[in-house]
Length: 464
Image 1 (cartoon, rainbow, N blue to C red):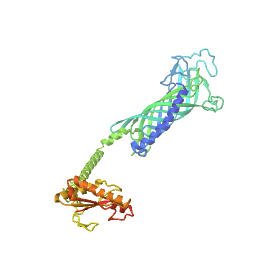
Image 2: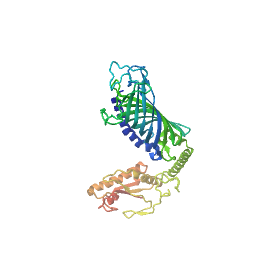
Image 3: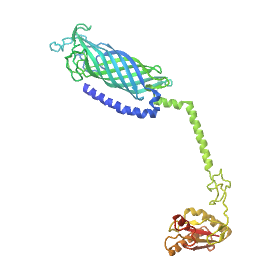
Image 4: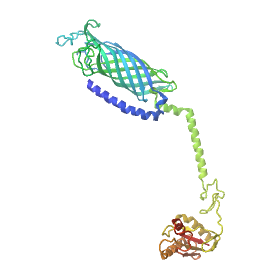
């Protein structure tokens, strides 16, 4: 894996971190957890470990191309971290380290026929690179959290990738005990930036870009302290990491570390790093107080449903619920009052001066129509029942509003009266006991100058 490929991978990962995971943190955290404000999200860490001049991925090394020459030595590496956790899935970490990277050849490395020069010392046996400082910004991806003993203990697995800068000075030696200096460019490094490898100048250290890629595991020791163990591969943009070498390859090193991480903030708040939404949901559902509250709520809902059913029950179908019906069992279609009892209509004087002992409201019609409305059926059913029971007669007077000609309205009023008559006949009333007559625009009960008045005039009056 060359540096160009690694750099593209890191940039893509950084975009995912900045766009995808930041958006996920903003969108999911309030929904799943109720907001980051109820969690501790800042932490600092101290760490220390060892370095090796290669990685688990293998590849080239800076000292000899033959297996057997290159031997690993370990150097110390230590530093600090500051991290902001945005959700249980993602955080950003600022990491700073310093230390040494060491390696040597077990036997004198052959120079492949190349004469010794200032840049390619023949038979160089060892090298030590002092990393005076290394700083990187890393995206930390939480891979999963395992909880034990109701989340009092937890193990968290993570991966990280980032980009950084390091200041270092490589020294090569002729002996594998790191004596006999053959190359040391301290004080001669230039003011180079990434991509510029001019070696003239007066700087003690060389600046190099690098990409850290690693994995790790954290053990929650308490609500404040966690044990942090990890392994990081560092891919550099430098072919002089260990001084002059025999190939123009970008070099790398790795570090294995352990340390302690301290979560900042109130102990009353949970650490977002170790928050497990599945475990949180499970614990909440297992909480006896929550279960009791849910059961009580279900009982209240059941009681409320029973009360609603009782209030809405209407056995006789008169529109008044049984709880408030003072006259249960009234026949269907009976006009009742608010207490469910039949309304007794007083004697009413009709428009022609006659008096009806049993008053029925006029049957209303739509404009230019003789078709009965369904809302009239209940009244006509009751009238038919009364006529059959008493073997009595009824007179039906049809009327129309003032739109149209008088002759047209006369025929329309007659059709309306006959429509009511036909309904009664179909209900079993003898046709001979029914008199249906149309009077056109005569005897209006309201003004024909307004639509409200004309609606009232489109009617059939019932006289007994």
